[in-house]
Length: 77
Ligand SMILES: [Zn+2]
Image 1 (cartoon, rainbow, N blue to C red):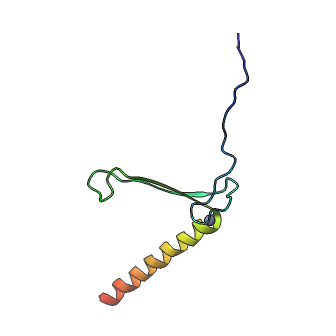
Image 2 (cartoon, helix red, strand yellow):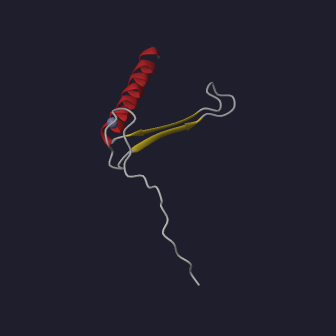
């Protein structure tokens, strides 16, 4: 026998981008970290939610910095 009742449940209807504060309309990417023992940020947790534009902007920055690092290492050898 099933017993039913109506319940009030909270649902996430939108996520605002942590970089630009715009609505993501639930299309977002995340950067997460939980730093462990021995790290400089031991015990700290991070969760950054980003809209599509900001996510790919930051991804591009990471790729550019990696390229710069590779170029810098190539110039040193
Ligand atoms: Zn954004």
